[in-house]
Picture 1 (cartoon, one colour):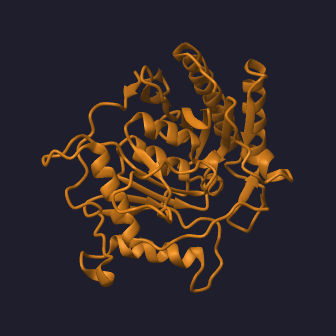
Picture 2 (cartoon, rainbow, N blue to C red):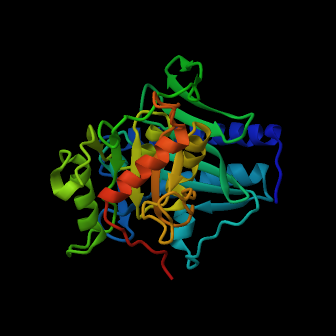
Length: 339
């Protein structure tokens, strides 16, 4: 096993924040240049799975900056992975950076501000440092970051024209989950890039899940969740950090990749949240502890951190109860890695 000190993790966090800001400046300047020009895109899987020169330019910027400081570390980036022939899950226990240079490319094409630069760092296959920078939110961007460690922390910084704000800690005691959750929760999910249309397609199942979660209690043959709202931001990274920061309660996602969620998971874990498989493990008993999601499994159900409730239930008890309630109301999704 690899052991890194808190000082070493602080150094990787500082570098990731610096590089994310530089990448954000790159994207902001790119957007300014194209105010009166349509952004050139290429399709990958289909017309909603897009890549731009900016995606590739930002990944190159991040990769070069990180490997200059840490040439011995492994690096997994969305664009280089997508362009390569190797499609296996590449993460091993060695220190590894997992990067999505632009999560929310479709949003960026439409100048919708939910676009994020996601830089995650794993140690022993666990997301340990997470930095997510949304360059179009606020004056000059909003930065979510964390070091997942007993001596670490999680922070929110906003950048205005006068410089950065004082980082806001995200680890203050969060409120308990709603008593009858998912009733009263804010639920995040995405339709994703798989748009095939048949009764058992992932798209059809996701649409069913969203309606189930929104429907009144007792509706949909008992599957109604009566959540306060459904939010689809067009960026799994932003969905995850909003739940990690307590600005949402549940993220239910499938079909995305490790670079979409790695940085957000590091922040979520440090703020007391959990992330499990959005499909229940097949042999899990009704009282068995629920394991953490496989980072490369392409299915993620995240629940925000919370404090003990009025009935004395611990945070983990509330979270696992809510996971099982979500599982009762959702269809099983079938996403696999390409072979």
